Length: 594
Image (cartoon, rainbow, N blue to C red; front, top):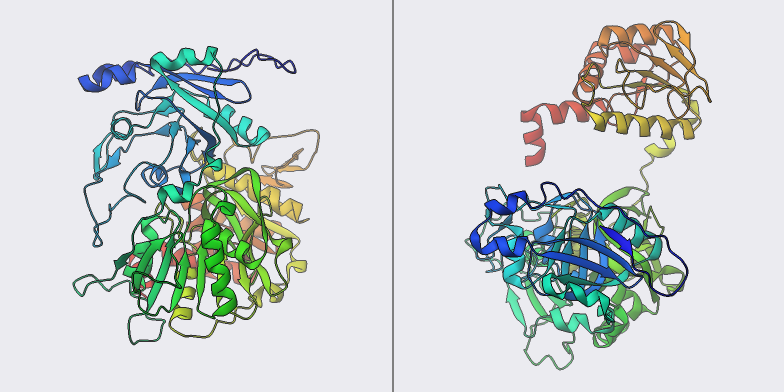
C-alpha cells in the first residue's frame, strides 16, 4: 500500500493503491525453514515527501536509508545490483516480476579471477523495491534465490509495492531520499527519520580499488573475439582509473582488445607513479557513483593529461563527466536521472540512434564546453548530453555503457574506436550515410501496412502495439496509411467516429482516430495483398516488419515473385534481404562468423 502521511504542509489526499496480497505470502510457506521468518516480515518504504509504501520483506532484516531511484530494465538484476554506480541507492525495479531466474554463483570466476556473472564482488545497492517477487527460481546458472542472496549480503528488500505508482511519483517529484524499514523497525515511521543523501559522501572513494592491479590475457585464453581491425605488434598498455569500474569493462578491454590493463585507484598520481607502471598508450576513466565534482583528484589528473599530452583518453559514465569537468564544462543534478537498458542516444556524426544502457543521476551541460570540444551524442528523450569529443586530439567519452553485460551492446564499437587510437591509428572519418538524402521521402504519399494475420483475441499484443505506433508515426509525417488486418479486436482496427476515415471489407465505413486511413479486414496473404495493391494503385511503400511472422513471410513471397518491384512499391523499414538473412539459420550463422 502506498499512502501519504499526514505531515504539516499543503493538503495531499491520502492515496490508497493497495496491491492485492492474495498469493504474496502463499509461496513463503514452501520456502526453506531459515527463509520463512524473513519472508513473512512486514516492511515499509518511507520517502522524504511523506509517501509510505507498505509491503513484505524478502531480503535482510536490517533497515537502510538511501536515494530512491528506478531502473526500467526487464532483465539483468544480478548485474544491476552489483554495479558500483548504484552505491547508496534504494533501487526500484519497474519490471513487475523479479527473482524468477534466481542469481548465479559469486564463486564462479572468469579468466581474470573476477566473478563471472557480476559487475563487482558485492551487492552495491542500499535496498531493493519490487512489485512481485518470486522465491522460486529456475535457470541453468542459478545457485540460489535473489532474496537469500540479499539477506546474506545484509541488503533489505521489499515486495508487494505498486512500483508503477512509485515510479510515477519519482518522475514527477524527482529522485527522493528514503528509508527502507523492515519488521520491528517499521514503527520508526512514527518518529523523526533522518534522511541521508548518499551523494554527500565521497562514494567513489568507497567503491574504488585501493591498489594497482594488472590484467593481461594469457596465451591459453580464446582469441576468437580479438579485434583484427588494429595494427599488429606489441601489446598496448592502458591505465584505467577505477571510480567504481564494472568488471565487464575489464573483460572488454583485455579479452576482446588484448591490451595490458593497469587498474588504479581513482586518485592515483601518475606523475609520481609509485607502482612503476610502464609507459602507457591510453587512459581510460570508468563509471562510478555520486557527484562527479567530489572527484577532485581524478579531475586534476585528467586536466594535466589533456593539456600536456596527446595520449588517447576514453571515459564512460562518471568518467565522461570527469573528462568534461577537466575540460572546463559544468555538471548538474538531473531530476531523476537515466537508468535502464532502453535509453535512445543519437550519434551526432551520423544521426543514427542507438539503444543504450545507463545509470546516472548527474549530467554535463554541453553549452559550457570549451570551443575545442563538441557534443558527440545526445539523448533522444530528454536531449541531455550523452558524449563529448575533442576536435583535434584523441579524447572522447560517453555517458552510457557500451559494454553493458545485461545489454544492449549496440555501441560496443566505441571500444574498437578507442583501441584503434591506442594502436596509433588516426581518428576515423565518420560521415552521414548519403542514402538518407537519396531516398526521396517527398515522393511517399501512401503506405500499406501489413498486420499480424488471423489470431485469437489476446494473442500477439506486441504486434498490435508496434503496428499502432507505426501508423501514428506515418500519419505524423503526413502520409496516408492503408492497413490489412483481419483482427477486429485490436487497437489498430478500433473505430473512432469522432475522426472518420474509411473502413473497407470491401464496403466503406467510417474509420479514424490514430488508426489507418483505410482498413481492410482481410487475411494477410500474398494473394489478398496483391488485390489491395491493384485496387489502391497509387501505393508507394509497404511495411512488412510490424505484423510478425505472417507479415514477414508475405513480404518475402511478394519480393521474390517480383510483385512489389513491378508495381513500384518500396519496402520501408526492415529490408527483405535482412529478413531473409535472419530467417535462414545458415545465412545468419555465416553473417555472425564474418
